[in-house]
Length: 510
Image 1 (cartoon, rainbow, N blue to C red):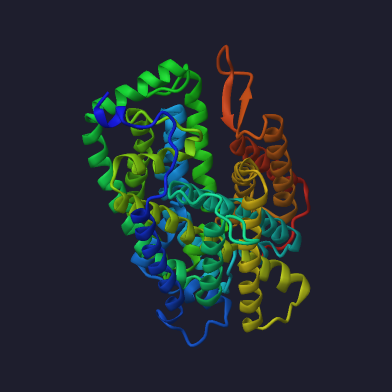
Image 2: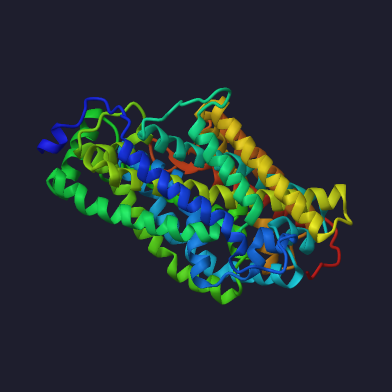
């Protein structure tokens, strides 16, 4: 072990570093200013229209879309959680890499058609598309509810990523009067205000800064950290030794992990662009060609993600002993870099929470406004009224996520997010199949969604809210499969059967 690694504390405990805090606060201030001035960037005639506030006028070109979609797809929690999983279990944590490779051909083939449907018909949400295709309020409603419920814990996870940064700065638990966890609360109140003011333009503009900062941080880390720890050979050797000593994990997959790894990657890929926040980025593009170009360019983020995941192995080589695996990335930067660069890294991760959280709250607000408020409360609402409802809803969504993190166990948000991935996958047949065929009808798709949603929830609950199900075939120990894919298969089978026996009605061509 190198002297640097030997000098690492037995159990990492963050200390206040004023240079790190100063750099971090500077960059947070910068993006706050950018968030508020974003309303003047590409200024429309009015923001009092849900197309302008919630979709940026559907006018984002290739580079803006690249930063925006990458910004809300590769989140602060990704930067924290992927290395944490690799630190804990090794190669299995790299499932995020093949899933982000699989997803882009899906985006290339499917999303331009979906974008065109939304553009032609003025649709803002996935539930709008489903209602337009199948003329079913019930199917529209379940797609909308699934989107909102799956998104809420995802926003909370961004707060977990920001909490890790605040903890690394030595400010964790800081309260001012009645305000608990003051830094986290203030950061998200500022986020709420500039999202309310500028809509999707705010995270789109901030995404430029966030992604450039993340690239700088990761490139520096994967060069400097191995140099400090004796090279990549020492990094892999230390990780393997720790896994062997712990009796779990490893640099390669175990025999019973291969199917679980593959199905988790495939299911995650199919679910990724069903979420409201990723679809919001797609619907905000200015053309189908922009989306295709992004499907070609976005794999650059997969390379970045692979480098980020390597930080988990580096945590072993640095000799870090952690109370929480989510501390591995902050601990690395605190231990091996000067305070000013650690502050820069923490700012990049924290800003990486603001961009996706903003887009997620906008996506959820669009769903509530279009597919509940307009559908059931005020069908004659004006475009300005829609924008107003969406703005208020985005505030409520962010406050709800903040309260979850402040007053409920972190595990609650983690468990709900795992369920959210299973749930959102069940909207794929209703949203995607209708782009290619008129054969499916609402009753079958609704029945399929119900079976997939309930079945997936039950399997996850029975497995202790874990995303994997053991099946009694494929070898002496059985086969472990991602529950989301099992539920999706049940969903499609039921949809086919019910569709085959229900009376045919005239297809809706929209």
